[in-house]
Image (cartoon, rainbow, N blue to C red):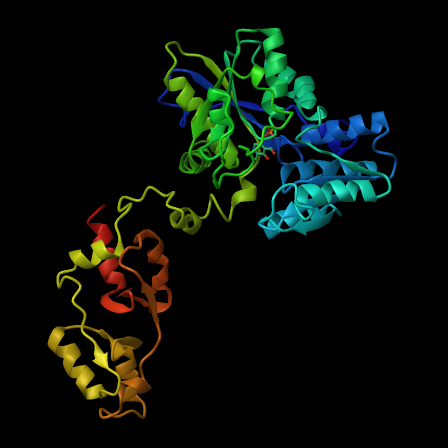
Length: 455
Ligand SMILES: Cc1ncc(COP(=O)(O)O)c(C=O)c1O
């Protein structure tokens, strides 16, 4: 029987695949190391298992003990998987900004998840770091995995990932590219590869907003800024991050990470997460400035399945300005300016009759009117409501207020038009208000007309 004894035996030995389409514009060969093929769907299965095995050996984790970690994702999954097989309990402490999906995934393995407030300093007793430390101390048989300072983290990559890459490339790689979170991955692999061949260049990838790039270039600690790509970049320097093995650091933006992530799956069928897109983007940027073609190995840390409601969701991408739509930064105000009537808006007054409204619709050739009471917009009346009204019990002399609807969405002139496309659901129109002043009305056909000019 050609079967593994248990799930932990199938961690590692992940495939290395040549990239074609995404890397088509560079002379170098870019090889993708697909870490999402691990059973917990990420590179973190490797350090998680190493951490558990080393803690068993040192006696820090007694039989039937409890593994505690401050983690929101992949490391938790790896630890939970090892714990399930080896009969340990798990407690994961995570900040409250984490998605329900991630919490449920860890609970699926039987782990206890403790959620802590995000908006406190790391040394606050309520922070998730502090709570994890306290729980590890208080729980009998408790062991804090501590991936940011546990040498077993880089060790896993020194013992496994590094040798795998060396063998898969027959020692013919020139450059290794990896993202840097705890730094365990890049530090462990780099140490091994450089021992085999000191000429191998190791390139770290850092998201804009993280402190690593500046720290590497200047030695200075700068202030971190928020960014959306998950899993890499830091606001501290963990002891598992060994910059002495890193030769260059390349910076990538959120938008670059997400666009490359989408290209990887659409063009090459490689369904990886946002840090993988960042890593590939970093590799291409590095390759573009090489004089000679090189063999470049890029590590893709996790699976795209964890980001379906973000990177692979058009609405989320659009809301955050990450989709390169041809109409890009055009605003609702631009759209109004382009309308034939310059966005002129006709209204009905609250209290006017249906007959008045029909007259105005005919006069100006329009099919709907916002209803205003003084300066305030109180409703919308359109042809269908007028028709329904007259076909029913309604009369021409009734006030429009009886049949107006609230089937509209309110937008401001400065809003980018991209995200507003979804507001037309259920036959709604957009009323444009600037400081409560009615500036115009945008219908679905106005929108279509405007974007068609860009296509
Ligand atoms: C999705 C993702 N990308 C990148 C990394 C960075 O790996 P490392 O912590 O080994 O530097 C991680 C680590 O958790 C991750 O989860």
